[in-house]
Image (cartoon, rainbow, N blue to C red; front, side):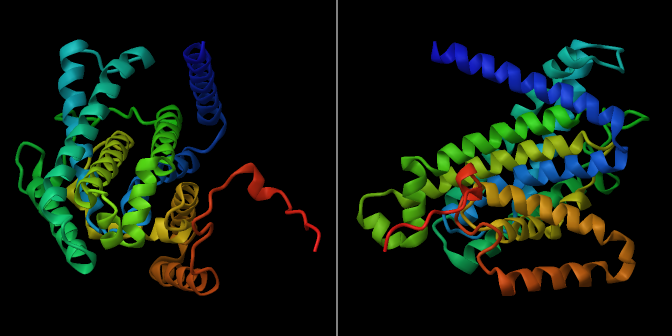
Length: 331
């Protein structure tokens, strides 16, 4: 009976997202909708990175590499699977898109998770600055591999071999549905016994290991889950535009992810979502300032860190009780 209720609720949510997406596409400016979709993709990236940087207390600054793995794997799979299932068709309807896009996103997440495992096993025995340097180097290695790969277009980018570029599948329905799924899964993971073990590693790794927690294995698992989320976000990002280039996944993309979770609040899932939207919208609002754009953006971040150093939410979560006024008890 419980599964039946959950299935009905899932269908209702998906139907709502689909209807809302159609309404937004018909009534909102395309530029505004695109900014919203980019913020949603950033939220998936931030929630995933928050698991390793905020909950586990490690410092990764190479997550753009995992995003690149997911983007290229998803794009290549979509072109191969689409040509195999629907040869000669250029315009697909939603059920056909789901048959192509969902397996491609899953494969992109698995490829990114495998890359996370590859870099996590040898490097997560390190801590602090050493771990940051290793992850930074990994992200740049991945970018340079795609930059010199003829199969994926090299420095000019990958467009699937089509004159019109990659098919534009990413819309409000996919970003909202997948974003909600990632937030729920990582949120449940964060506040489970597994998440409490990760918090123990963050607070005192030596004490956690003395208490019997296999710290390296837990950190690697968190790294793999975080990389998988970045891979899904990369797949959505790739099919929001006509082509992807290695320069889309440079070092500054990883820094943007770190800024999102710091602004929202390290350790807070909903804070990571708020930070992603804050950073994405702020960068767009300051675009008209031309050469002063990054200066104004940096000043905003400095002021935020001065007056709210723990971020927007700190370690708290955004719940209904957050908006209620606390009652003063008896003295």
